[in-house]
Image (cartoon, rainbow, N blue to C red; front, top):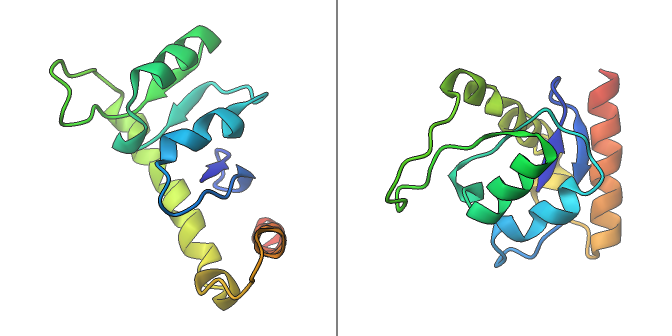
Length: 123
């Protein structure tokens, strides 16, 4: 999971096992970060996340999951900026070491992501 800034540069990321749901990583990813708005996809549509963001004064720009009985409105124009996260993942996957995960340990893979993100931010 990654958190990018308004320019699409990496702000924070967290490695999760492939079998874990994305919502598990939201709390450590957002801890101590001041946000005006959080743009996420339907996987992040949970009541507990929405309540936490509301308490922090953060706008949740998350489309409602199809299983919701009552649809929650969201800013569709602001949601279009979610492409910055997708673009970040596409950029780091241009580096073969990241795309194929050559690194055997989480520590070395995390270091490779930091190195690539720093390289991309300097471009």
